[in-house]
Length: 488
Image 1 (spheres, one colour):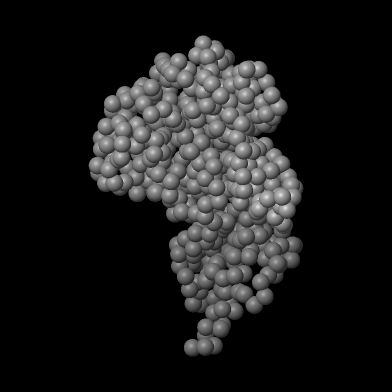
Image 2 (image 1 turned 90 degrees about the horizontal axis):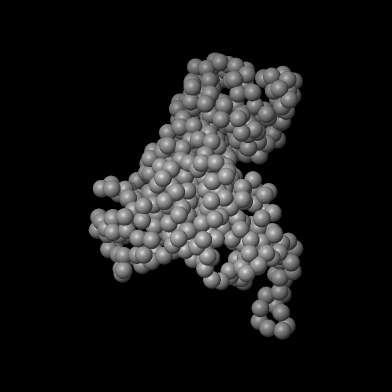
C-alpha cells in the first residue's frame, strides 16, 4: 500500500520545498570516482588494469543529504567537520557549487576529511578505498558549530545524519534535538547508535532493518507481520521517539506513528546503485514534513525520490522534474485538466523548466508515435502531450474513428515514462492549448512542413522553437486501420 498523492498536489509540494530552510548536521564525506576502461589483466598480479579516463568528486554522507535538499530548491545549512586537507578543500568547493551554506562547517588540522575513492569501469565498482576521520569531535566545538547555523535563519526542519564518524556525539545530537523542540520544528535522525534513546525527543528516526534489530536487542518478528510493527513501536516508545520510518531495501518502507503502521512498497525500477538512497530518503522526508505533509504522505514522496536515485550511478541527487515524474508514475495519474494543469504549468515556469509539447489523435499507439514522443521528450525538461477528444477525431478522421476512446488513449500515452502530462482538448487544432502552455519547444512529425505546424507563430513569438521529428516508415494509424480492413 502507498499513500495517494494527488497529481494536482505535486506542484504545491515542490513549491513548498523551494520555500523551506533545512539544517543538516552530521558526518560529511567526499566521494571520489576514478573511471576508465579495462582491457587487460596486470602482468604483476591477477587484477584488472584500469585505463583512467575521468575522475570526479561528489558530496557524501551528511553533505550528500544537504546536496539533495539543495537540488530540490531548499535553502540548506550544513554543520560538520572537515580536515585542513585537499579533500576538505574539494568538499567545501563542491558545497559552494551546490549552493549549500557552510557557515556551520568547521575545519581542523587535527581532523582528517572522510574520503571514499571508488574505482569503476562500465558502471561496475572494482575497488573502494576509504580514508576515515578518526576520533570524536569535542562536544563544545560541535555545539559552537551548531550555533553558527542560527546566523542563517530559523529552520523548518533539522536532519541528523549519523555515519558514526565522530561528529554526532551525544552533546551535539542533544543540542540539535533540543533546538528543534524549542523551535517547534521536526527533527529527523538517520541513526547509528544502538541505543535510540540517545535521540530522545526527535520527531522521527529512519533506521534500516539491521539497525532496528540492533536497537531491539535481537531478532525482530517476521517482516510484514503485525508483530513486526508492534515490536518497532515498542522500540521507539522506549526511546521516547514518537515515530519511525524503517528502510527495507527492495521491500520499501514501514512507517509507524502512534497506533498506525503502514507499509509503502518500493518503487519498481532497474537499480544501478543504492549509494546515497538513505540520504535522499531522509532529506525528502524532512522537506515533506517542512512543507506541511503528514508523515505517511511525506514518506510516500521520499520513497519515490529514493526510487529515482537508485536508478542512477554513484552518489546522486534527484531534481524537481524527476521527482514530479516519479510521483506522477506512483499515482498512475498524468492526465490533467482545468486548474490542476494551470498550477502545474505555473510551477514549471517558476523554476525555469523547459517545456516541450506535441499533439495528435494517438488512435492505436504504434512505433511512429513512440518515436515522436521520445524525440519531443529529449527536446525539453518535461513533455506535455495534447490529445484530441473523440468528437474532434471523428471530424478529422471520418466515420468509425476513433477506435479507442479518449480516456483510454490518454491513459496509454500517460503510461510512457517520457511523458509528464497529458491534456485532452476538443478543438480541431491545438492552437488554444499551445497558447495556454506557451511551450519552449513544439515538436511535430516530419510529414508537416514548418509553415504548416499549428501554433508555430505563438511558440516562436515567445522565443521558442519548432522541431520536426523524422517519421518511422510505414507506421501510421490510418495505414494500420486500412490493413485491418483489408485482412477482414
